[in-house]
Image (cartoon, rainbow, N blue to C red; front, side, top):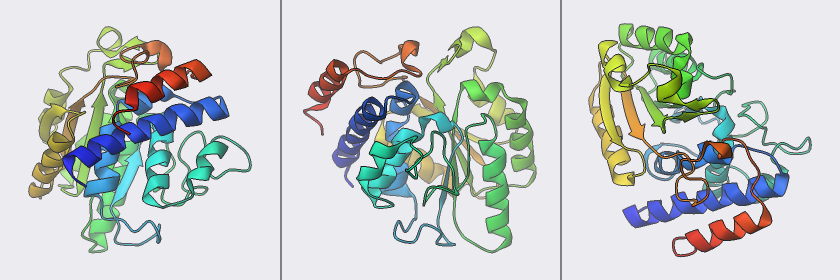
Length: 272
């Protein structure tokens, strides 16, 4: 995909999320919007995957540690061909395959359960080391939030990844400075997060998380570093590109009304 096509797809996925959460009357829209470009670049540009063969052994892996944002991952997977887009209407329903948090036992193409915040880096490290031991030349991408980096298990995994020179592990951090309880900067001393990761001997980059070319370039840079895991700090905006959601923490978990869905459609109408 071209840069323009990737941007358009990111907004298409945003609208998919708004429509889906409105339809099923449950979900976390705000956290989805801040990772739209990250998810788009991974699924439509960077990851080596075979949607028609979800368990292909040589595939790249994507672990969504901030599992509550799974509606946008599901939207990308539907458009990539893992399952029918009609499944989105059964999100969080007993008869559907799309759980409220990712579940590898229910959904084809999901590589790990998640949702218990902080565990994605450790899970990703285990998969990365396992693939390396089997001689598989692939990459494991882990998407984490900034708030979940308050969990101590994140830093245990970070230390272990550096110790084992996990060059096939790439962490993309959605740093929008919002979490369910308020501003990250007001609730913890996380920032500057990239300096902390650097002190753990990770390869570190800081980028605009809504710039698809910046994301692609950062991933290319990360792949060039073979002896260290990589941390890409993506500066983002919660609720990005939905006017009433942007930087509004009330939209961490909230259902858009029919009127709000129409506002989103009109706002994104020129790009999707």
